Image (tube, rainbow, N blue to C red; front, side):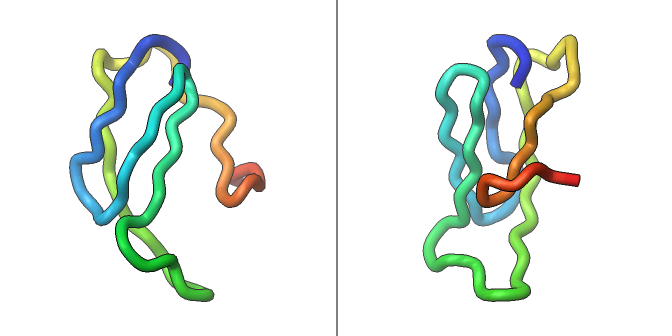
Length: 63
């Protein structure tokens, strides 16, 4: 997150950890099977003045 926003998970079976501007989402419970998926929603507060950047999944950039 670009500023001092705090992230709250609003739906989905994930936990969120935040360290400064870096937010990490992890599935709750068991891992995600091959070809599986995880769906979740989150809300930053206050609303960011800039869009988030640097998205990565398992260390690989999001497309």
